[in-house]
Length: 575
Image (cartoon, rainbow, N blue to C red):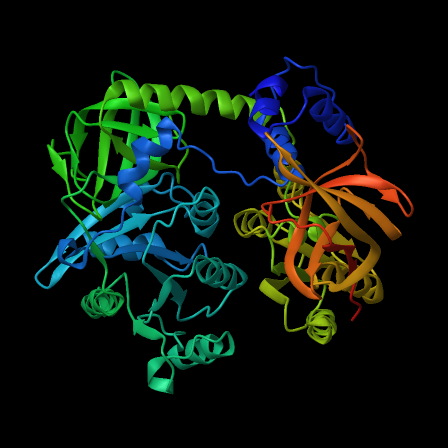
């Protein structure tokens, strides 16, 4: 919208708007088209609310935001992800479950791709996601994808809890999903199941047979022992979660993997989370779109429809989206193409702006804008004693309004897993007497994560103390500015009723607030819409001068009314 058009909407002179924009450090002429942010700022400045019209994209995706009625929902299979330490047998255990030879094609114990597999049992169906670890899981979550219902934490009975195990637990907790523990390698002579359970209890994963709520299942990927029981427990947990979806609505879901294949072009592996996906439907994925030309299930069989909780490989998408991107079925190809085109342009514009992650410096700004009410932390230290000292110091800073949430802690240098978790959770990383490894440094630079390394606990505590004080709700204090008498009422065609006033005490300001008193009773308390001296807009009028005042949303002005001008002062609170 141009400055001229906006002036007509606001019933203000273009010169007034241009002056207001200059005060905001925005240089604009009468025919200049303002961006959305500038338009909103000007409207709010003049006391107008904003109602954003629905875009074509919002209208096209509206059906996916509608809430399904209870009668439309049907039970769906659980989606399960395996996590754990690199050598504790995640892939071998998954291999034993689905009766394939995936483990033989592994390299160095690390899964080479993200896959998804269905397992059909007499008592139900399960979809397993085969991810390269908790880092990939959380990287997908950082793009807004909730990809799993249950995490099976694999812990070797002979090794017990390892650093990567604890990382996996923290990543799963941050995602808010259920955790089942599979204690693997129970066939080994060194296996010690009770020691593993004790370690789990120390991490607040209390086993059921210890009086807790965490399901633990001893298994052996080598012999197959306990696997049937593990599957039963997964289905039991799924029943408790009451997982449901509506298969009769247009499909939506998430990308698990995407690549370009010779002879096929872009190929995407999708997980349908709600609705039913059909052949020849049009879908939108981030900045890509397309009509589905072919679909293949996890066994390579051609299919024409895919139900909720099932994976499928699709052909026909215009590009290669990132894992974790959501997809939606759109009614026609033209709409999908238009949405993709606008998203491409939006992405181009966003790339021109620096990505800003949470940092200590911008905490106060974010809380003022209503974006933040807790401070998530990842803490790394050189030794356990240092870690405990830091936690103790932070606990003493905690207050009712602010939640200091330590989502992960550990001993050793800041690594890539820490940084990826910080990206997904919008957390700060605090290190004490440690450094960042090379891969972590690359990610820190790329993602703009705020990582603070300290050598003195006092300095760490002081920085966090100042940040927390910035998060505290300030004390609000009314400051009296002046007293004004209403001596005459002017009826204006555009501005409505305007009070002809005389300032008897103090001053009145355009940006301040006003209380209107009639017979000593308050009949209005709100914003001043305009303040004029003769025909000119002014910022303030001092004692002994006349002025014209219009009140925002209030026209019942009468001669003899008293207006008290005031402002709200925010006083920062201290711990």
